[in-house]
Length: 95
Image (cartoon, rainbow, N blue to C red):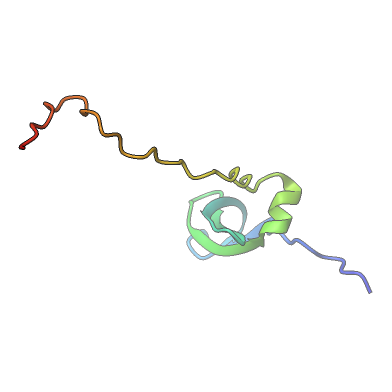
């Protein structure tokens, strides 16, 4: 059997401050590697009414998830040179 409801979003929630069901605004609260966490706030007074966690696969399907960074190659260090370094006087050789 297929899943009918992969993603639920609240349209209205009861606000204890307004004492009525009010429309809500989802606010992106936290972005984690595996999921995004949204905060539901009352559209009338701004009271926090709840949270929702969205799996990263759903966020990518919507185009909301951040794209992964391109892999970087470590920079190679050059071997130390025997010559004088810029900004330092050359060392004196003691026989």
